[in-house]
Length: 101
Image 1 (cartoon, one colour):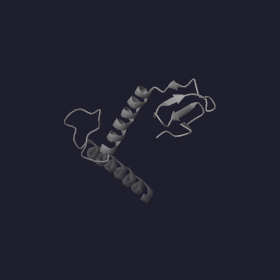
Image 2 (cartoon, rainbow, N blue to C red):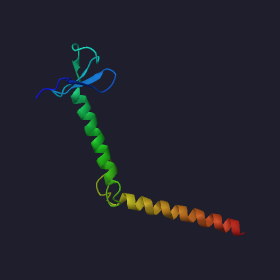
Image 3 (cartoon, rainbow, N blue to C red):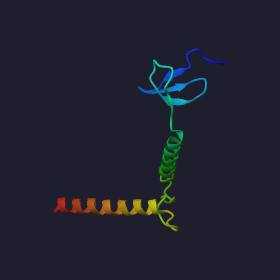
Image 4 (cartoon, one colour):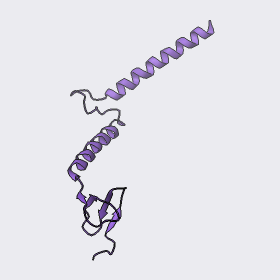
């Protein structure tokens, strides 16, 4: 089944042919002169983005390790959070002691 208006304008010079699914550069009012869109580069950038999102999602688990850390660093986020909370607690306690004097 072919659609009568086969082009969807995505951006100023970017349009998609509905019948073939090809995304290309071209003007909306012309029917010729569109060039194929570089999908390989787009797919590689999407893969990098998915990897970064997976790393971010795994960082929500306090017992996981970051992607760039060495082996045997399980629970590094929990240790860092505990150390941060201890330091903040000591600073707040020192502020209260100074204010009470």
